[in-house]
Length: 151
Image (cartoon, rainbow, N blue to C red):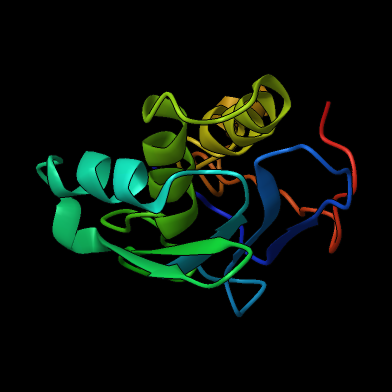
C-alpha cells in the first residue's frame, strides 16, 4: 500500500461523524511519513485495545483529549518520482481505522477513498496508471489542498 502524493488535508464539520479531520504529508513531492486522524465519539479504550492487538501497533500513537482522540501513524517517506520502497502513513492509518469496526458509515467511506485511492505507486488506485517509453510508469496525481466532501 503506497501513496504517491502527499498533503492530504481533510476537514469535516458535520456533527455525529466519527472522523473530524485527516492530514498527511508535509511536502507535495514526497510519500507521507506521518499521518494524523482526529476522531470523536469513540471509546478510547476500545480503539487503544484494537491498536495494541495489531502486528504493527508500534506504527500508531493514540492521544486523547476531552472531546476527541488523535491517532497518528508512521510510514517511510520517499520522493514521489522514486516512490519504490516507501510506505504511506496515510494509507496505513486509513486502513487501520477502517478495519477497526469503530467508524460510522460516512467516515468509513471517506477513509476507504484514501486507502484504496492512493494504493500503488503510480495512480493505480485512482485508475489513472499509465506508462510511456521515457518514464515506464510515471503518473503525478495532485490531491486538492482541502477535501470537504469525499462521498
